[in-house]
Length: 316
Image (cartoon, rainbow, N blue to C red; front, side):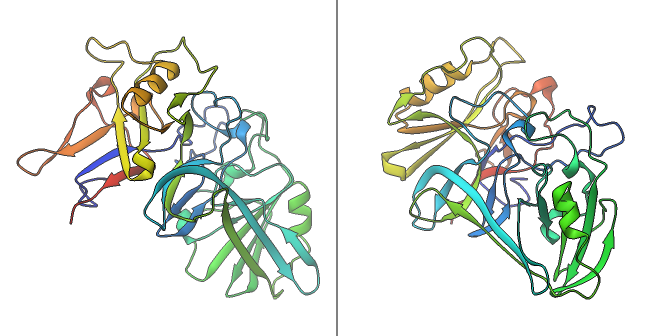
């Protein structure tokens, strides 16, 4: 990923939908758990907390937690909450409960744009807000809107690339019932945005979970499970960003607990620190003196894992 984007350094990003053994026959999407922003625009929203993959959230944490850089050039953490609506003249306004995410809240409607890709949308109606392994609902309905008009409908989630100018609305339970009222030819307007908990909007952001605040580790972090870890730190009022990846499954390293990771970030002078995906996903690469990108940490079984996103550093 870093080589393709001509970055000088990069670290893996958010936790993601890595496998679906709990839902036989359903394709894993590879989509991340948290929100994502790129070039100032929303890519996706957060799945319900109970649908998240990865280690347990810190106390008070949420899948809406992110790390990013604001349009002011300052690195920060925050939360990004989806705000969106589906508006029709005949049927009023319906709330939007999801955007390009692998799991929709029970009873909601989610929007899928061309940025979702060609992956099946079937996973989005599996599990519940609290239990990721819960069965897939049988009450789903899908509506394809093109240039503001309903073009087709389906009683099952579809797959394949979504053409530019189109958006697919997928509902489950109460959301499916509401979508069944939208017949082909109905005029529909879909609008959405990710609302930041801070004052400045993000130029880019991805899911990350704070474990250091005001230079101090969060209380109550796990002190037992040691794993390879990836993390990101903010220093000097948001003008310095530190990318970190540690070993833990290869060589002599036993890994770090989340509590140890937080203490490490604090000793590196980070005012704020957040953890990213770890385990077999933990990867940090930088260019060497010849200009080639080299992985710097000891990878699980010596192999890079395909991940869904990351944070990259560029040079002019």
